[in-house]
Amino acid sequence: MKRRDFILKTIGAGVFLGTSAGIGKHATALASDSNGLPYDLVAIRGGGAAEMFERGIAALGGMEKFVQPGQSVVIKPNASFDLPPERAANTNPELVGRIVKHCLEAGASRVRVFDHTLDNWRECYSRSGIEKAVTEAGGQMVPANAERFYREVEIPRGKRLTSTKEHELLQDSDVYINVPVLKHHGGASLSVAMKNMMGNVWDRVYYHRNDLHQCITDYATYRKPDLNIVDAYRVMMRNGPRGTSVEDVVTMEAQVISTDVVAADAASSLLFGLQPGEVGHIRIGQEMGIGTLDLENLNISRLRI
Image 1: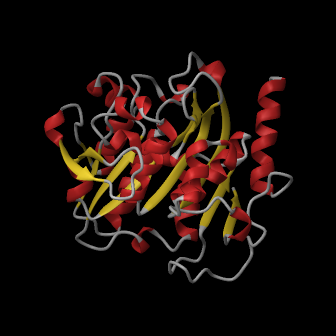
Image 2 (image 1 turned 60 degrees about the horizontal axis):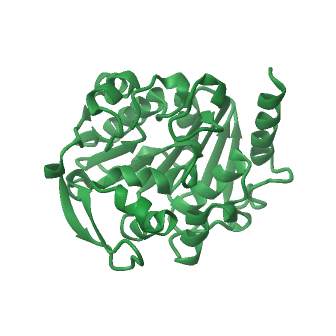
């Protein structure tokens, strides 16, 4: 193992073992009563992406806690780049496929998956491996490459983003599951759950021209996912969001699951080696009351496979 990779893996291990960058002093506390779930956040380490999800969703009581029989589900991974899974620019396809499978087993009527891609959408869906995984699991990939798929929505609490055009699936589905990949981002410092939601809207250029961190946070005031599942199996540590080669990637074998989008990002930032307050939209997310970056006061389950 290269020295650089060893150092980065050590940083990640610290997050999950509760050392100097530790999360959740109440990791063994009694069940949370704030949302009916046994934990506020689950951090898993040491297995394949699908295997970690199996352990994590079981710790939260199963997908039945989030999907009721007959409900429609939309899953939003990061599938923006025409790159293979080993480049870690997109969400791990095995993870997305396993989430689809769990939703259908919970009784979902339909499970549809989309992303407003940066590269050609057909190539992104195919080369990322996500389309194959979703289809084999019984789900459906849906395009997001044309403005006709989007509807105007108001963002009442937005400061810089007060309205936008959002993909119609988010308005027509009962359950929204956000599945980002953890990676470096040149403009936003870090791309995780809140940043992944930029792929929900038509005009992302507006974000970049009008205070990126504030716009990311503004949209999160309007649209909170029912569940956030952060893929950190492979993590792009530099040159994000696209990366240049597999040399940018470290295999961390980690995953974070939470209903709190700010907490999911905060835990992921520690895994990456950043303090949550160093990332603008995570800090603003706490200030605007979207969620919490105060991980010390959360009830966290830490699992090792």
